[in-house]
Image 1: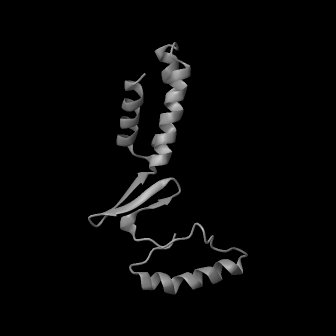
Image 2: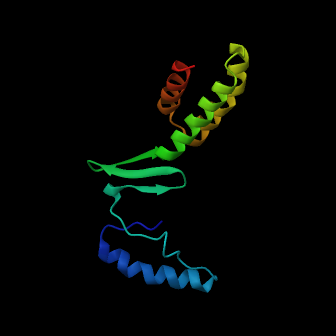
Image 3: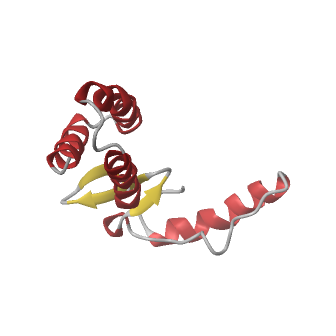
Length: 119
């Protein structure tokens, strides 16, 4: 990811980056490489980076959160008759991973409430 304050800077930097990469036997993927304004949002390493009212917001990608919820819901559907203790033992590690990778306790809390409400 390359950031700059204006489009002209990106156009100036891009050939230099391409040259630097080619010296190492690498190249930019034309299909994945795009130039966007931060207000449009960028998905990068599982997170969505976007600027709102001059502030940078970093949130987990919506698709990643939905996939996580689907996995939890599927497990709960397959284990409807399991004791509460076992549910907690099985799901806690998933939520701990979410908390350490996302580091957003509010997201974790909302997900737990959402999943458990339907259980």
